[in-house]
Image (tube, rainbow, N blue to C red; front, side, top):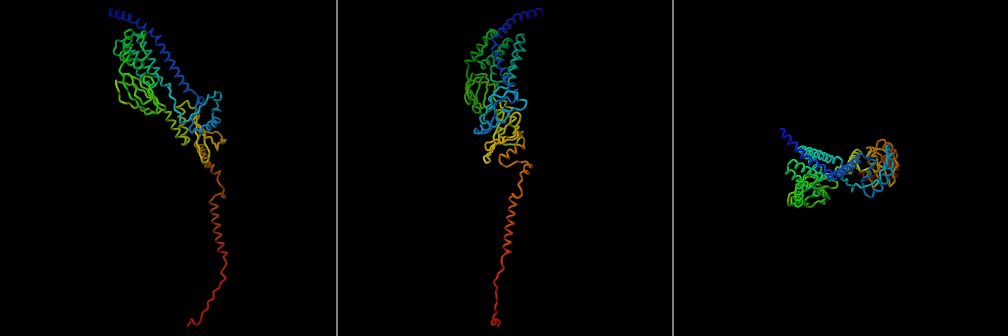
Length: 448
């Protein structure tokens, strides 16, 4: 037992310096990757948190539902009446939003971006990589491989984030180094082959692994660069969909994408759609055509619901605009114009993060002064009645504008009928009696 303990002690003492020196020497090699990763995560998180924490007053876009010819009128009315000029109490001390931009709803497309929650798996990947390196330095290859397997799953599931393919390649390289250290050379070769497909320019340097692993990596990367190619026809149901293979832009769909045979990361993006991502295995030769159906972006669906709700009741309109503003924090306000060509009147509807307000009334180009109130079913119904020149809709308002009896049509119709009847009766009564008399003469001869 003592000999076995001494042998293990000498083995560890002989093995630990080389591994420790490799790890210490690899710190400056990985520094660029870690630094770029930290900057990437910091910028993405600051952008996402800034959007999430921003007050609605600080947004800088207004989405307009209407024709381009109505946009100048809506801009002039809203800029003079909205919170942009007179912010609500409590926000008056805040700076005004810079350069509020108006955009037509027909041309507005939700901006693609990385949400903070989408970066959480990559943060976990980085933590698992650091823990795996520490376990490998302590000669606990089993724990290191277990952590790297978890990091591998997380990295592959996060391919919708631009740049995630580089994370996958880094995990595969660390997995290959750890597997070779544990004597599992087949696993190391497979991981190096996947890393070579995902990030071809990346190389395993001498300070990152033992000379045997570095030589194996060089051979695998050379074989991957000169390996067989496969051709994959890709078609997408969305217009101007862009294809990314291993985070490299391959152009717009449809097209036949040529790539080296092996494992690749596929991502497809299109305006108004959620990005599609998948880990694909490409074989040699021409593969069967693939058609991808991208799910619609929730913000695009919310915009469509707002377009329908513009002619609906007040509750439906408020709910639809609130959903769109919550999904698209870059929007400051939603504005629409409802027009009646016969009365030449218009309603300007405004909805912001603080809710919807009663429509502004415009009569032949002039704004009708009124008290600024919230949007309710009553205020919206009265505004639309005014728009179509039907008068107010509440019973109190109807009683207030009730016509007097002498101006009602049926009163004068009855009076006219009575007058005609009286005239006819009077004419008959005043007709003179006949003046002619008839005399009958009887001849006596006729009686015989």
